[in-house]
Image (cartoon, rainbow, N blue to C red; front, side, top):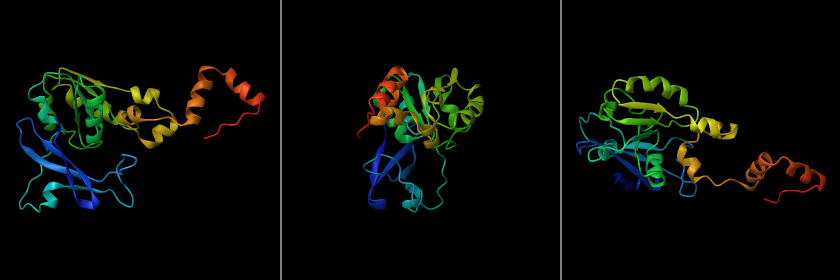
Length: 207
């Protein structure tokens, strides 16, 4: 199970505890989410803090690890690596046959030292939209560590311009509910004759 807690900060926040493969808690990442949309609150600022900062620990040296790293200890399942902690948690529900880990951002703890825990593993990287090329470059440091490394471009191949501009991640697609207009657009793409019928009868979409 993932180590997730809550905090009273900002009127209620989520704490994603970073626990390493040896069971040691490195820190907790505190983030504020919109209760209605499930997305992070980023305005008027990015509401992100750290447990060690909130606890005012003296002489603390932060050494991050992958979120969910402790799940590697008793499992040989292949790994899916994503950016967001929330994405890892959500996707572990939809596709539980993999160990879903998060780097904690586009860069986060995506470095050679933190990635050593993936030695000998089969790993698939699933970057957010807009970060695929950067992660392809970063994947080079995994080639000498992992048994097999793949950078998935499935999101880039299936997304539209609006979704790319929003920088959506794989969890957004699994949780996504299309609007009536988007459903109609998909229907027209499958059967262009539908557009002719709409135009001829002067039909309007009621949303």
